[in-house]
Amino acid sequence: MQSMNKNGQEEVKTGTTTVALEYDSGVVLATEKRASMGYQVSGKNAKKVYEIDDGIGITTAGSVGDVQTVVRYMKAETNLFKYRKDRRMSPKTVASLMANILQGSKALPYMGLFILGGYNHEDEKGEIYQLDPAGGILGEDTFYATGSGSQIAYGLLEDGFREQMPRDEAVSLAIRSVKSASERDIASGNGFSVMVIDKEGCHVLEDEEVEQYLAK
Image 1 (tube, one colour):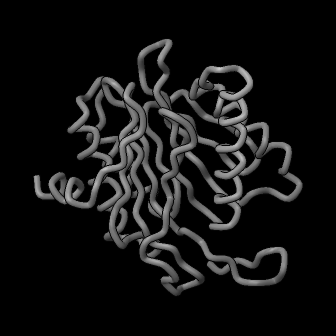
Image 2 (tube, one colour; image 1 turned 180 degrees about the horizontal axis):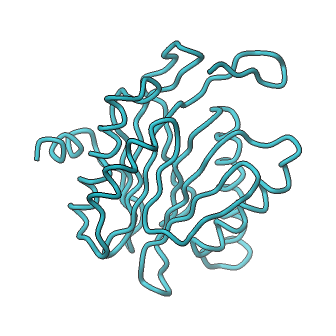
């Protein structure tokens, strides 16, 4: 479906399939790379996974301009907090701050869906939160999917997820979920972006590493 921005111009959408899941010592975030404008593929290497702070990242789905603006806000706010308090924000605190920013703009909302994942150093575990354009926040589940291919991704996540699964199993499940959605959803495709978050911080998998998981 085509969409217009405030200037009457057609927006670039990331269509998108994004997933996030917790594993025994962290979080996996995964997306594909296609950006679309109406029924046209406008980009084949769109960035949809961002590191917000040390040990905290988000996936994005929606209007490219809007989600990039939110990412810039969040990077600035987390950096300011570290400068003023000399400590990092917890994933839950970052999610709450992001929800407040989105809620404060709901009259002219940022058209995006977000999954925030991070490592809680105090509780020594990974955490994930899903946020909507109005600032709604969900944090009770251990996996989420957003975007046009999310229903397909959820099918694999529901079937394959288990509590306290090891890292490699979680990464493999995340990639397979996005791959399955990419094969059936026309707005998803063109490769994968995968970020693993643990007590050491955020690690983005190289294409070669992703291919190794796909070959298993």
